[in-house]
Image: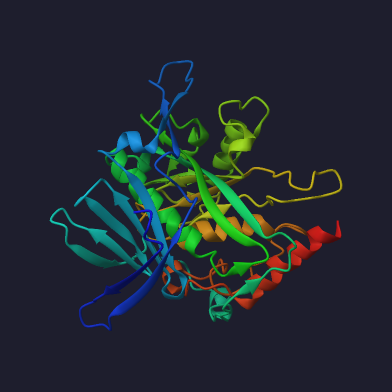
Length: 365
């Protein structure tokens, strides 16, 4: 598989024009050596969760290599799991379609759907239009930023076989990384530095006491403030020795449930704890990252990958001045008022200007 750095692919969709992809290999998002940490807790009184570290290739049957390809122009991200000769699994995203392989080695495309409509208020209508750019120069002297993401799954994310969950997660983050392809000065790359996988419903202390039921309904949701507080306590305080800060720049909690505040205002598609990674203030070292918490809802990793890109972009530049200063009124991916199925999977000129302003601000410090 090493020799395949470029790969043409034709996709035929019934009753629609064929899609011709020019896929290029990308590295360092994840490999077969990416660590996975299995959380163990039997629900006893002390509620101490311990973690066992493995490589992700140990959970697959004879996994030789994970290879990722992208074609940004067609918003395509394809991941190949190579298990040896004549045993290749190919999955990914093409725009808002999901490419999946069946047991008989055939393929199908599934149109992404979303679990609930958001209220179409005046802000939604005002900021719906998107302005597209091709390449996005962020005016930074840095050539490249690699954002190391530690992914922490909740119990609702671990209901399938481990190998299926992890493969879906890797396919998902290949698509997240693909959305950052047009950025230059610096180039922005996303790397999965580890996966935290709960073995039991008790082994997610970072989500503990965060789940509750809607009044009068069986459906549960995640309490936003409680989740953010638990994540900071579990991962970011000085006593959190299990996952050292050098392991990650961003910790993304992923759940299959809605995320709501105390007034039941729910973010069905993701929410971020506002801060910045490369906040080089007067008392900070030039390249000293500050780990950040984000919490995202995903529908079984079937789409919604633009939400994680939105969270990372918020973290990279939305809080250098005041809370919610940047991006809220931007179009495209960063628009918080637009439902994900209406996102054109493009960054707007507004996004580019705000992120560029942030990087120029860093230079002036």
